Image (cartoon, rainbow, N blue to C red; front, side, top):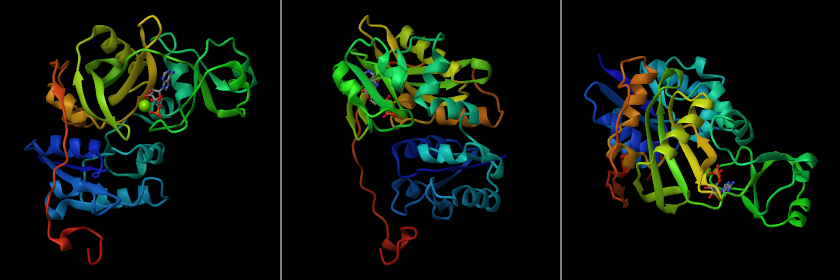
Length: 322
Ligand SMILES: Nc1ncnc2c1ncn2[C@@H]1O[C@H](COP(=O)(O)OP(=O)(O)O)[C@@H](O)[C@H]1O
Ligand SMILES: [Mg+2]
């Protein structure tokens, strides 16, 4: 039986990585979607398998996805875009295909950095964190501290606050958190969680070079403490499937939680090359098919370059006279 899968966000690094992973399977037919006809990953699949979808934030997104799922008889949809996850949380039952993403509860927990810290506290080291309200400001902080939006992404709104006067000068905002500053090295751990908190794989990586929030060069590292901390956080957040757990060492060198992105990371090709084909296993897991109990990885380094692909102008979807 052929499994028909639509991968969204075909223009992003995570989308391209998922498409490439699934194209290697002979039992999977891959369809690629993006809101933009210029999205490169669309052109990794044959012309009749390319789809344009509305923006993830737009009200028509879920209906459009549902229509594609029906017309294309999809078995699964892999959303690789943050805003699509938010839109799909709570309305996935309207799409007649399996959504390869964490549960609505786990998405809600991880997409809010305040509820996330509360969920993980006790299960793993978390930096001291409070909402930026009068009580939060009154805490006896060790400076510097970090303030950041509960629902931020791409480092937007993250600021380092060096002393009490600067903290007290901020406008109170319960959409923002105050957090102990973690001064050490930062890691990104791609985790693949099975049912009931079972970890199939956890692959820590050092981000050697970052461009626009995406690691473009890095290496995987074996480190039991990073692996077990990331797994403990993902488990506490209720993740089943793939998530990217970001950790940073505190003043004592202990890795503590920064955040969980409940989706495929842009550096997924490195994790796959290290031995763990997370998109492929996550698809099987979501469809209730057999998955390995655990998958080892090896240390490997990766660099990345742009590659040009040339097409007939008429092939570009939805762009008149391109
Ligand atoms: N508590 C903290 N201590 C030190 N650096 C932090 C802290 N929180 C955030 N940062 C820095 O800001 C970046 C973005 O914060 P993060 O929590 O990952 O939010 P997002 O990526 O969603 O914007 C981190 O990668 C890290 O470099
Ligand atoms: Mg981050």
